[in-house]
Image (cartoon, rainbow, N blue to C red; front, top):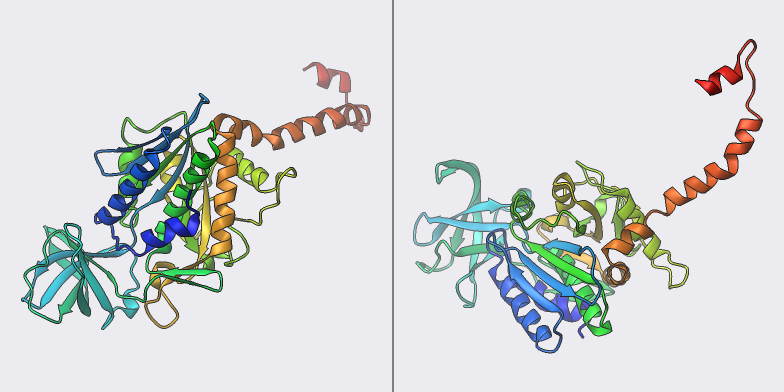
Amino acid sequence: MPDFLDIALPLLRLPTAPFHEHRIVAAIDTLIDDWSSTHTPLSIERDTAGNLIIRYEGANSGDWLYLTGHLDHPGFGFVEHLTRQDLLFERLGGLPVQFCRDAHVQIHSTRDLHPPLSGRITAYLEDTLFEGERRPAFRVSVDESTTAVGHDSFAVWDLPETDTKKRKLRATACDDLAGVAVGLTVLANLLKEGARSRVALLLTRAEETGFGGMLDYAASDQLDQEGVFINIECSSCLAGAPLGDGPVIRVGDRRWLFDPQVTAALVKAATDPSLAQLPYQRRLMDGGTCEATVLSRAGVRTAAVALPLANYHNTGRRGVRREAINLDDAEHLVELLTRVARTGATNLLHSGDSLGEELTKRHQLQAPRLHQTAPQLPGSDSEAIQDQ
């Protein structure tokens, strides 16, 4: 079975944007079809919003463990032709507008695989009326007159090719395609081992425009109220998690705190004395809000992990830059989640309750001594207090 880089590199070389994840979906479909031809426990579903649910169903029964990630990255969605060489694109997600003037983009289509058109941003329009709504938009100039750009077209930054150097992986869209690749690699490990667990990988659309795919899933009948969810993200290293110090086990984000029992189980898996110790960072990561908050507020048990990310959303110090993750962080996150996936959802919840057991033991040890040595206040009636 392939390793993380085998899976990540082909995905990270594909363009994606909110509502335009089609090429990523097609690549994953092909990958799962290939794996399924030799491994029967694997299946793939697609809901009405286009979210993917890939299931690995081992021999064990019990609740499902869900790993989740999103298929999009901030980009540009085509709106209309202003002239034959000037196009209007809407802003889809958190783009670094301070560096956008004269920045170059590639214009793709979800419909075909023709080479992209080259374009250049000539203006950022903060308040543009289209489709009866005011939205931020960009004016893009192309080199040649064209009518080929249509409503299935989208644009991404025109940046150098994806590469690896000095244990760093650099790409236009590490967030969250690197997280998707982590989840797929965990499934590959389970297939290779013939694990008995029940693990699903939920991959959502349009996260960058406000959790579109996850909100649709959470509001649907497909939400598994008995499942345990672990969200995989790439999150800015500026939130206090340096690249190379290990993947992050997230306590929460800017808006919400996650399930402490599942979080404790992740820490326990990283520090299992019977296995090699995995480096990790335990952080709040409050630079933004992630899909784990949507799931948690929907009432399911949810935790989150993240790969520390440089140049978050392509914002470099002086311009638009590729995002970057550390390969060791990614490989350690794959190992951490593989350990958790082997355990399964039911056992995961049990293993994460060590704090409760520890507190109970401490109480049992100290309670007799507390009661025997309790100081008596002048004029107090300790017997009466105990009888009340």
